[in-house]
Image (cartoon, rainbow, N blue to C red; front, side, top):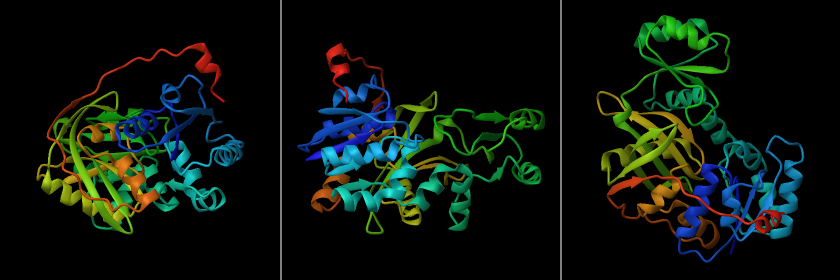
Amino acid sequence: MKILVTGAGAVLGQGIIKSLRQSTLDCSVIAADPNPLSAGLFWANTAYRLPFANDPAFGDHIHELLDRERPDAVLVGTDVELSYFAAERHRLEALFRTHVLVSDPRVVAIADDKLETARFFESVGLPHPASASGDEEEMVRALVESVGFPLVVKPRVGARSVGVSLVRDRDELTQALEGRCGLVVQECVGDPECEYTASTLVFDGEVQASIVMRRDLRDGNTYRAYTGDYPELNAKVRVLGRALQPHGPANFQFRLDDRGIPRVFEINARFSGTTPLRALAGFNEVEMCVRKLLHGTPIVQPPVRSGTILRYLDEIFVSQERIDAVR
């Protein structure tokens, strides 16, 4: 079995490779990334360089790579590549007899834009933070009058808390919005002690499995996760997965409000940076998805180990010969 993982330099791509290595799958991993010094390239059996996703040559290089390696499955390891693979999925699958695990363009677009995420939940009647476009002064004013402060100002398209501001009054709000566009202003729900990350696996229109973890953040990434059953939250997360209808994995990040209701502020229509953490808890979503795609193996909700997962830095030495071998 051959599995191609793109984005081997990203936390997500590396997490997918880690999950494959933790699994019982007998597979050869092909890793690809624009940077030849990406650590994930050296965890793989074969490594390739790709252009950046916004390079006009990206699609041609993907075709060449798929034609050369003929992987059984393609797992996308960066957000910036999702739109391409979502649009081209069926064509790539037909041309190269592979399985591309990516949601359709509608789902990717909803998840990519935090304002569209809020609008989606509003359209299906599910809880979410009250939100307004930072480019619409009247909408922002109405939001302030409705929910007050504090508020969160963030880019509509972004990740890892880059460009995010917590504002406590009108002056801070004005400063956060000044000279910037493409922002969303949102109600600040709950506090950091009640923040969660969750995953659902959806195939054939149904949620096959789910997991919820409470988390602590550092620099926008989960660095401690607390695992357990969370039965009530899992039930609510499955409602979210059924509403969104991704193809395979989707990640929901939320806080509990003062009534204990989860209000989602971000969706990732893919595996997420906490995918390898979930694998450590007994929920290896990468393995479950690969077995479903390639063998038709039914996904069965696995038991989740209860405990705390601690994240830490690690190192790898790479010889010049191995670096030169990246194609």
